[in-house]
Every structure is written in C-alpha cells, then in structure tokens.
Length: 171
Image (cartoon, rainbow, N blue to C red; front, side):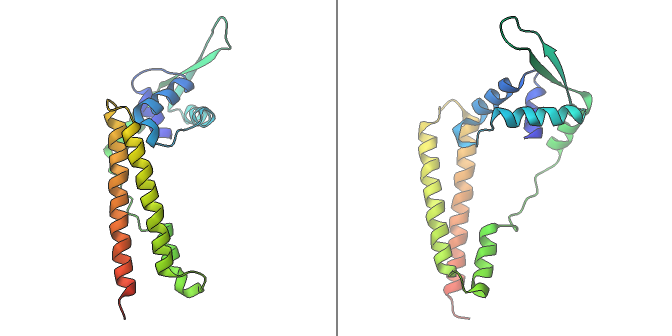
C-alpha cells in the first residue's frame, strides 16, 4: 500500500479519503478495497519515514483535514520502485506445500486436493467474469487487472492439470 499511495501523491497533494477514492476508481471492484483506516495508518508511517509531509487544513463546518504531499525522498523512493522489475516466482505457493506434504501426513489425498483447488479456481474465474461484465468499460486499468487475474488463473488451472497427470502416472 505504501508505494501506490506515494504514486498517487506524485500527481499532487491529497488527503487520505481522496486517496482511497482514487485507488477505488483506478482499480475498480476487482482489486481488494483498502479501508480508510489502513490508508491513514500507512500515511502516518510514510510521514514518519520522511517520504511525505502532511499539513493541517482548517475547514469551517467540519473537523480539520490533513493534506499530504510527496517529499523529494518520497519521489526518489517512487522512482526506485518503478525502476525495479518485479521478481516474484511462485515457488512459495501454499497449495503446492499442501500437495507436496499430503502423502507424508496421510491426512489428505493429493488428487482430492487438486480437484478442490480446481473448483476454487473455476469459481474465482466465474466471479471475475461477472466483475468484468459489470465493470465500467471506460476503466481500462480495471479491465486489465481482471484480465491479468483470469490469465493467471488459467495458467494455474493448466498447472493443476499437469500435476494431476504427473501424480496419476505410475512411478
């Protein structure tokens, strides 16, 4: 959450609720929506780290609000984030750990695990398809997010098929 908030502040100053709305509008309903409390806690941490600065703004009929802006240090951190490619291979996959350890425990059948996981992925795929149909067509970012998630799910389904083929094969 830290770096996406910094990225939003690179456009200009904003308060926490504005940042929450900007994230929701940008990413659509497919992305898990952060709560405003999480946003403000993160903003407090970013301010302590010197990546942003906050300024109290008086409001006549409401409580004061705090407007945040990016510091030079924050802009440098954001540039470094954009410069680094993401390198997260899925070798630390929780499902794979279950699959690998099931025979040693005698508590779960590998093929049953695969079938249960397949059903989960297919249900998630159906949910994403409904989201894609309901999402505003003008929000290209949200559609790309949904499409990316669906492509990852399809790859996961293909991988489950491969696991099943390998495990059904006699040694």
